Structure formats: structure tokens, C-alpha cells
Image 1 (cartoon, rainbow, N blue to C red):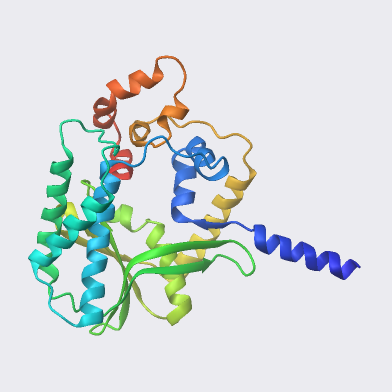
Image 2: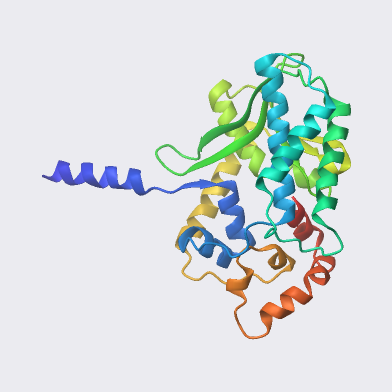
Length: 296
């Protein structure tokens, strides 16, 4: 009987154990109340999505299509094919309910930004035969044995035949460009590199690569095994903090203007109107880090 209880407890723990993601952890750090709405209360957001999110999705899916087409059909992709594919993906998921916070710009302006991103990317990276292994590769990172896990999706995984290194590529469609110091401390791709080292060998070099499409610029970083072990510990500490909190306060910032739960959160009299009127003012007064979070 005692063994049966232990078995049932173990099975229950397995099925109810939460698998975290970078976005889940970042949401908690950004605003505990938003985290509660999204992951605990599972509220349906009143705002479908922002135009920045829509732009990012259409560009990401188009780049995924490019590399999959080259890999599967071994053909050269022309720029007019790329723009046609991007247009189709943009239109398929577009809705008039998409939120545009920066009212001085239209949906067409954002669409044209995407075209510009893809033309620049094509000029720099065609014919796209660089040793790509997979796009949108799903991974699971074990932070500790039989313990916390992180799941994620790599935009593009590459094996560089010239250097013998694995590369984790990530596309950014935001306007701001972080400095090298910030990238050297970035958590998401560093966590993903843990999974790649588990798959291909801990002694393998894994390069973290960001494509900042608004600047037509590529930046890189990497982590030592020692740094990755420290990152595991830091991430576990963050998860334990998340699981132990009893209160989920609102973190008022410029990010509120882009939040899909803002109408639910700011239900007090007059606050909702104030948010709508001051959207651009909030953005202009935001810190550089807040703007980076908004636009990336």
C-alpha cells in the first residue's frame, strides 16, 4: 500500500509539473499581474495582438519558409517569391482588431517595414545555403535532473561546416539595437544552448546569433559551460520565487500600452481613458530597456 501511494504521488507530480518557457519567466519579471492573468487565471485577452507582433510573426514565418524551401527542394529562391509569400502570410493573419499604439503609423507602414527587412536580408544571405539543420526547432532544457524544465523553439539551428560550430539564430523585428554587454547577459538563447550541448556534446561550441532586421545587422555571443551552469541555478531561483509569491502586483510602465490585458487591469475609473490618450507619451518616456522589450 505504501509503495502504491509513492507511485501515485510520483505520477501526479509528473503530470502536474509545470514546464516553463523563457516568455513565461519574462512575463513574471516584467509584470506579475500580467503573469497571473495569462498563466494562472488564463484570461482571454481583450486585445487580439499588436501590429508589432503581427509584423514579427509574418516575417518569422516567411524566413522559415525560405530555409525550408531551400533545404527540401534545393532551389534558389527569388526575391519576388519571398515578397509574395510574405504578403500572403501578412494578409492571412491580418485583422482590423490588431492594436496600433503608435497612431502616426498605419498597418501599411508596418507591412512595408517587413518588405524592407526581407529585401535587406535577401541581399545579405541569399542563396541561404549555410548548413541550416532546422527551423522552429522545439527543445526541452533540463535545469536539474527530474526537476524544472524549460521548453522553447529555436528560430533556426545551423551547423557551420567551416567552423564546426552550432549556431542558434534568432530574428528581431524591433527598432532598438542592444549593446554587446546586454547580449552577453541575454537569457533566452543561452538557455537554448544548454539543450543543444546536451544533444550534440557539452564540449561543442554553440554561437548565439541575433539578426536585428531593422538595422540589417547581425550580432553574436557565446557562453562557457561554467556560465551555463550558473544560468541554470539563477533560473531555478527565479522559478522558485515565482512559485512562492502570494501577491501579483501590477508593474506600471510604458509596456502597459502594449499589454493585451490593459483594459482588464486598468478598470478603475478614468485610467483606461488615460492609457488611450497617453500611449505615445508613455512610449517616448520609457527607458531604453522598456522600449527594447516593447519592440522586440
